[in-house]
Length: 250
Image (cartoon, rainbow, N blue to C red; front, top):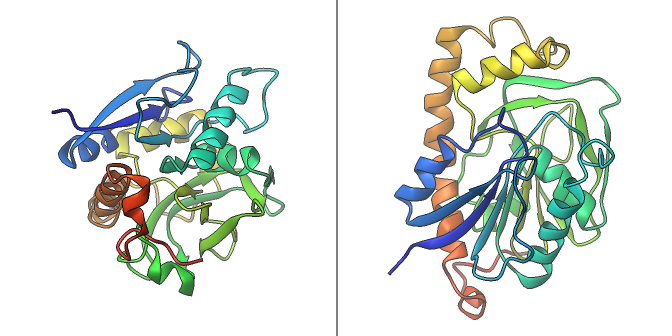
């Protein structure tokens, strides 16, 4: 018997699914990675039990340069409508918001970057994914755009001083997180090289090698269990999610 089938969309090779892929496999997921800039996306989510969309340096509405973005938004919209669990990261979160009635814009006060903390909202205490996480978990920020208006059906789960809509849930199981949980020190180095204008927003010391190495150990301790809970959610039939374990409170 196979594992939980999860489609992982990588908009850019600059944001690969490792180490996330290892976390998914260890949790019992059978992850299929697709890079829409290089190969066709599945037409539907038939046969998949979860959808993960990662980040990239393009904007969520840059369809002229990246026409496949519309297809990614279509998959996200379909997943929310069909209650297929979604974990959308950074650009993925912006695509999720845009696909379900929210708005995305450049950040008015400039980019948010560095090894920072977010603050969970009170309602997140009852959420199946974020409920057990610390009140102020470690996250990696590296973005110049933000979700400025949440979709009508969204519940805000976490914020930061510079960016209010850090984590949200659309519908019953469509999760968007503006920050990164899937990075590694080497991947962050590649972002700094390709987008120095965003990297410059970090405070001194945040990009030091020793700091990044230590930070990613803490990042894994917090977010690997969240990914494990996501796989558990994806592997649970919709009707069984009515139980208290899987029913997030609005």
